[in-house]
Length: 266
Image 1 (cartoon, rainbow, N blue to C red):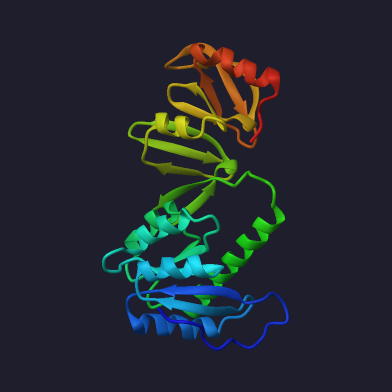
Image 2 (image 1 turned 120 degrees about the vertical axis):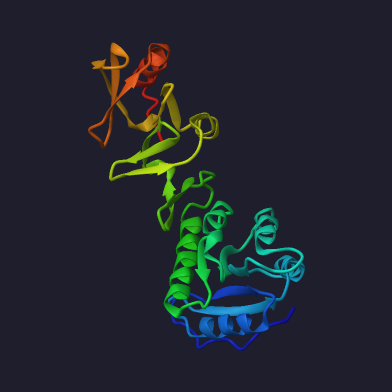
């Protein structure tokens, strides 16, 4: 555990981000410190370094950091366990993972990491991560007193990991062993169970069929519909897309109630 380092040149705009660097390799920490010293808009000031999770937790409890740059693979307590401990604090720093192994990306975002950098870290990627931290800080300041925090669904799409805001999702539809996630712009395919999504996001989504959940805010109109498998019945038209989804007889009353009471809120 080490203390402060020389400040970077002063930034006439926002104050530099206060950073904690956590890595068991001294050379890796030194490289990050050098790169951070070259960053601007926003600038960054490394307040302290830690070679293990125990020292990192002690430092976070002693002083305030805007960002913790955390190595994933460390002896004893690894970066993922440290992330869980940081998340339990009243005012945790933003978290960015730094690792040589890209295979941890999905888990990193599930742990609410703001970004995920692979070694050797490039200057432009580090600067982009700092900008995310700054944007998050501004958003929190702008929504002070608002208890609603934007929820996201982490999606692994080919070789890309994406944080998809729940507010952008129009429906979930189970098809064979997968679930289609539909937004106004495109569709994604994920693994999982529709029942789990229904339980987790019950306030946002409504079951309208054994194979479909729709965003309550997106419900627009019921119309008569013929389905080759279901026969005559009703379908729900949704905002932002042309698709219509068949409504089961069992869920028809709930859908009518949603439309009648104007519960289509995000």
